[in-house]
Amino acid sequence: MKSIILPLLAAVLLAEAGAARAQTQAPAPAPASDEIPEESIVAEPVPPLSKAVPNSGPTSRGTALGGGAELQAGSDDSSVSAWLSWVDSALDANKGEASYRVRTLTLSSPLSEDASPAMAASLDTLAKAVSLEFKFSNVQAYGVRSPMAAELKALCKEARTRYTDKHGKGSDKGVRCAAVAADDPAMNTAWEDLFWDPKAKAVILGAAAKVGHQSFDYLETTTLASRSEDKAVWSVSGFATYFPRKARFLLSAGFEHQDAYEAADEATVCPAGPAPVTCAAGAYGEPVHKRSDVVSLEARKIFSRGLGVTAKVNHDFSDDVWGVEVPVYFVRNPSGEALTGGVKFGWRSDKHDLLVSLFFGKAFSLLNF
Image (cartoon, rainbow, N blue to C red; front, side, top):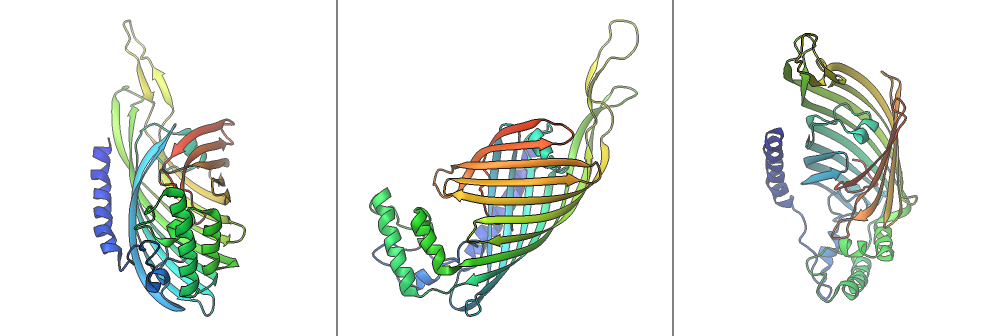
């Protein structure tokens, strides 16, 4: 299976780069509800830009390193990926502004060899390749607040009380205030309102480059002999995103140039000649080199704590093909912290079929950096 999935995705990107270099000065977990030192409260991350470094005062700069791994399983496709990200941030609460430069390295591999209809709706010709992607995002956020420690302490205490009433005494031990508040919709809103103006917004500009390889099995057209061949594939892309916090809505436009290969059409071929005849089945001919220029428009919306929807429209100018993907998230992970499963709908203009599949593993996020 992909030679054991690229040695377990390069040992999960070298154990997430040494457990993210010991969390790069990450604050200690928040203590239990009856012992909340102000310095631990002030060090909570600024929501909802959870990839940012902690807020440590009205003006601050910093760098954070993080990483993770993810298995995405679906009724028609599955993949595994590991990523490493590092963030440079600058916060000026006096001006109400924050900026983040996010760099992410992602190693991905599909777990199946067959073409996936749902992946086909994305018009991503690299979806079935083992790939390494570098992505850079520049995030500019407006409407940042710097709350007083006393405000945070009071809200954290109330959030922990509600949490332990719901989950049992001591259940909040070792859980950060931000995570405790996220368990209750009202507390989560109040928590974010301490850090962000209701009219806060973010503008994200980004670019990515991806390289990889894909294996193809096919039948020679002359001899019908079975052949296997590896092809190098690559892509470059860019995107721009607007996120108004109050609307809980994201709108993003992007462009991607893809240089990849597609398998030849499947066929069952029986050579001419006297009986008995041995027929062969498979991709008939070498993989076809394909260059694509794809533009996309994407919207994300969280309607409630239990429902998130993404809608993405893609257009391939090279083949004049449209593709539409609509994942609907409504299944939460075991800890209840994120939406990670649901139903995905897909459609392609050259297929005219509505594709429906189940998926689990990829966490829903309103932000795409």
